Image (cartoon, rainbow, N blue to C red; front, side):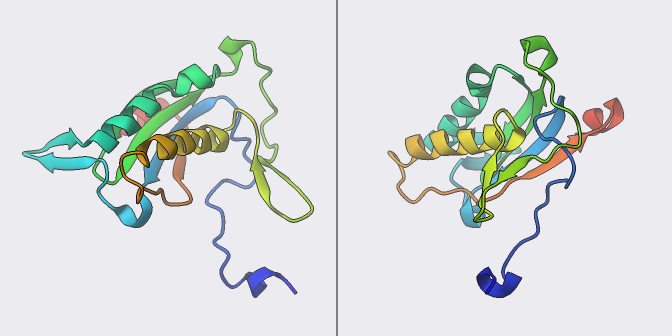
Length: 162
């Protein structure tokens, strides 16, 4: 019998044959659980970070310290989500650039996915994990939505629009 008979499985938003550890610009949106406003508030069109929002911003900015193949472009912390552009650049770090078209996840016999090292998923997973650990010292109710949204930026026009 298949788990939940595939009734409750949400289809992955990831491109099936894209290698998410390959060089590229990735626009990412990460939301809090139930879109709860943990990160602060907007007043007079300006974002005011809460202590939780300041932690999220700090850990976001530290991502390149933990992933040598990553650079960050613009980002913004909003009341209940973060938007940011993550640049994966294996060439400049001496890391071998993987072939495009390779699956992002390795599957084990139980169909549990594990993020490929240095992939967009592993980067976001690590960010969410360290952020959650620190934030729960202040607010034990803090949680993220289990997934994140990404968009592969294909050209300069898209990059400028974002």
